[in-house]
Length: 289
Image (cartoon, rainbow, N blue to C red; front, top):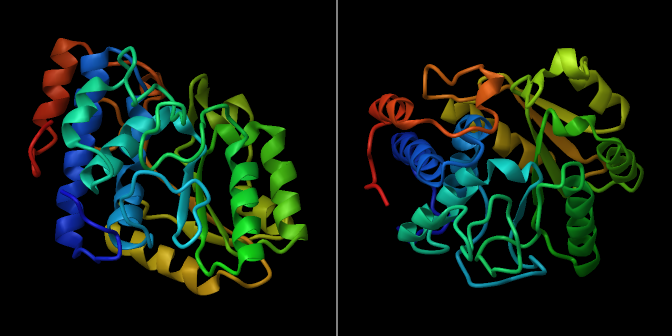
């Protein structure tokens, strides 16, 4: 499709893209018989809004420093099927390459990796808890270079059980890393079950506020106009004294009724019958790979 996110799509266009991204996710995970469909489906709307209507970026082979554009880091790298679809659909690499997801020697590994040189991926992620620290480093680099762009990092709400997240949160607030915008995918699900049962992090908004962050709740995290307004508000508040966190209340498995709100779809592929049921619920809007 070869488009830059400098171009703002209307909500109807964003909806069509998000629908295709969900279809791509299910097809990729099914064909590979491996992957993490639940969180990927839940993050599809936010990632679509970011790449097609908000981030100041453009497809290019490689820009490891991230200077001169906004930077996005997927810390919860296991949901990379969504990100790969977004990158392909926005022109970073051919859409046909999505068919190689998780194949041997593919550039589309089960977690984002840099060795393969996949355009759009600057940092190997998926070792949970590390992405926020890397994002802070990018944000400080931009500040030192006088770059006016922001750094965005997506975190899973199971991932924030990791202590390194909270060390990073303290560091960013102390050093007033105001060009950093974190997005927490708050679906209350992780591989072992409900996050409130595994290790409760509520009240989450109050915790981040206590750590010195500007907190923006996103309760309608699948409503594209609300997502766009929240992202715009985050940008307006950026480059001040406090880092920003958007807490996005998503639904794991969004778009596939039997996957929704079921932690068992954190990391397993559908079988043939399940695939056919899922794909029937997801319209083909841009053409399958």
